[in-house]
Image (tube, rainbow, N blue to C red):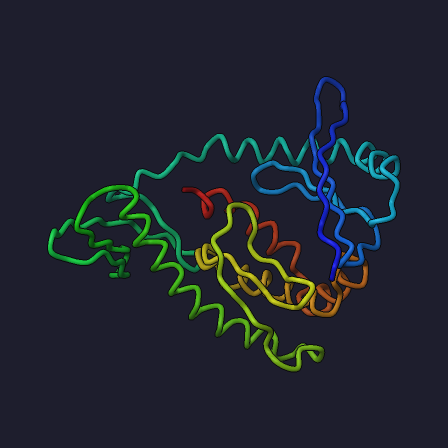
Length: 249
């Protein structure tokens, strides 16, 4: 049986600021070095080798405190401009990087469903409640994601010599993650990723497929990513910039 991932909470002082972060140790994956990530929701995660002393982890965070502070500040600034959805006609929606308008049609005799019609995503619902409209949209995004991801996964995996057959995949709505790859090689994808441009989708798929070869974020993992998508950093930045709009509930 594989050891479970462990997560612990810590904080350090940086000037007048307190940086709170989570340290994640995952024995089932070999983490070659201490890696620091700032998520779109401003949370800070630190992936550390299972055997790394806590003192070394804290030292690494302190060394990059300025970088962390800047990225946390940028994430919070983006969050400040994101308002919760009301699920009413006129709101903007995204699909494959393009902006559409939501149109809500109330029909007491109809079943709830969403369809794309020109520049609109039209939701027909027997009752006009945010819960009903969101449920119809979630179902629509899930179906679209299933079709788009299947096509793009096959295309992205085709030139990868270590992928002999497509890995099992599943869809799961997540609040801050685009995707993940389990130690057993199963890829989980967020249906909301289908809101992003195709290039961003391909980046996430390639990232997870690279984990089939390197179950970590080691230098070899990033060299593999560089080889197959040299501009992935630019694509990732584009995806991060639109993350709050994509994840907005």
